Image 1 (tube, protein in one colour):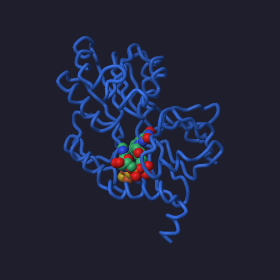
Image 2 (cartoon, protein in one colour):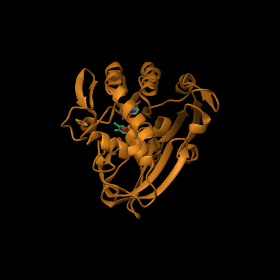
Image 3 (cartoon, rainbow, N blue to C red):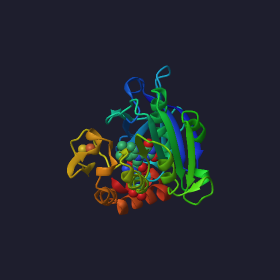
Length: 281
Ligand SMILES: Cc1cc2nc3c(=O)[nH]c(=O)nc-3n(C[C@H](O)[C@H](O)[C@H](O)COP(=O)(O)OP(=O)(O)OC[C@H]3O[C@@H](n4cnc5c(N)ncnc54)[C@H](O)[C@@H]3O)c2cc1C
Ligand code: FES
C-alpha cells in the first residue's frame, strides 16, 4: 500500500523518499510528522513530513541513516512497501502573517523546514532563512529554500561553506526587525538559536525530536518539560516555545537508549537482519 515512489540519495547517508500514502497526504500540513514501521519486526519511529503532492497522493520524507530502523528504511528500493505509516501526527506549524520570520534549519531537518518556510512565504511573510550542516557535502535543500526565502544564509560547523557557527545570527537580529523565529534541527542547534533570540525577545518555536513510541500521548516516551510543565511532544508539540524548554532534560532523555541503539545498529550492519532474527527466536 505505502509504496516508495521516489528514492534519491541527497548526500552521504541522507535519503529522500516520496511514499504513496494518499490519505495522509490529503491531510498533512507543514510541521506534521508520521510514524512508520517498516515490517512486522520493525520498531515504530517518527519522521517529519517534508512535503506533499496531493495529485499523486505522495508525501516526502527526508531522513538520516543513523541507526537500525533508518538504515533499514534506506535499504528499501523504489516499488518496495513500508508496512505501516500513521499520520499526519502532531500539531501543524502555526502559519500566519507574522512579518519578518527567521527560519533556521540544521542537518536533515532543513528539508521539512522548507515545507514550513514555503507556507510562511506564501502567506506574505518576509522569510530570512539560515541552513546549516556539519560540512558543505551534507548541505541539502539549498536551492529549494533559496526559492522561498527573501534572504538565505549558509553555515557549516567546519566553515567549508558560508559562515562557521551561529555567531553571525546576532548581526542579522541587530539589523532586521525579526518578529518570529522557527527552528528545526539537532537539539544543540535549537538551544543555541534560542540563546541568541532570547535577549531580543523574539518568540522562537522549536520542533523537538524526543524518543517517540506510539505518537498518541499514551506511552509517555516523548515527555518534555516546557515552562515547568510536563508536555508530550507527540500531541502537545512537536513545536514549543524554545525559551521555555528544559534542554538538559530533553538531551538526557534522548540518550536513554544510546548503548542499545549502538548495539542494534552494529548487529544490523555486521550480521544483517536474518541473523538478528535467528538470534532473537
Ligand atoms: C517528531 C520527530 C520527527 C523527526 N523527524 C525526522 C526527520 O524528518 N528525519 C530524520 O532523519 N529524523 C527525524 N527524527 C529522528 C528519527 O526519528 C530518528 O533518527 C530515528 O528514530 C532513529 O531510529 P534508528 O533506529 O535508525 O536509530 P536509533 O538506533 O534509534 O538511534 C541511532 C542514533 O540516532 C540518535 N537518535 C535516535 N533518535 C533520535 C531522535 N529522535 N532525534 C535525533 N537523534 C536521534 C541516537 O541518539 C543514536 O545516536 C524525528 C524524530 C521525531 C521525534
Ligand atoms: S510518543 Fe508516546 S506519549 Fe508521545
